[in-house]
Image (cartoon, rainbow, N blue to C red; front, side):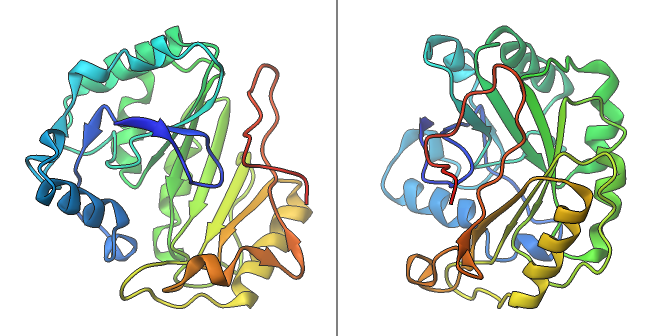
Length: 248
């Protein structure tokens, strides 16, 4: 439920909620759904419900027991702002993140409208980074909802990138992650799409992180863009540096 992560832009994952449901095309080949169903078949008790939304309250306080500062991706196996997660439970999770001030927490959601509605009820210390997943220009409205949130770092995950973004609204955005889809049925990504986003980030002076080309064999495809690995991160005082992230 909480472990070291192979995700390139973080160090650990913490899943006080598991399970989710599909709300847009980016969800079609969800890696978390595949993993949850596999764990259920293996008899892992936390995944007895498969990919149904399930609260895991017994590990809400787990980050408080981790004494070494680290970057923590919150709910890699769910969406904290899913409609089946009670408001009070989300508030509890945010209280834990505030108390665990030596860590940096990275939260992603596709449910940007609920995020915006709840934002004023949540605690937003500088160690909580808030992001939205946006797979195509059709969902750029999620970015505008994110901009209403008083997070110290607001970031975008354009993964799986399914279409070009000719003009991203980057004012008020502090970090952009881009990645292609991987796994069974993965949809293709075009290099021109990635280059265009990189150019927009460079012009806007927004840190750019290229996660992967993806494909059925993502390790073979790698993550270099024009001969370079793009590992840029937003830098704030007291933010732990991700061990998986190097210069070039």
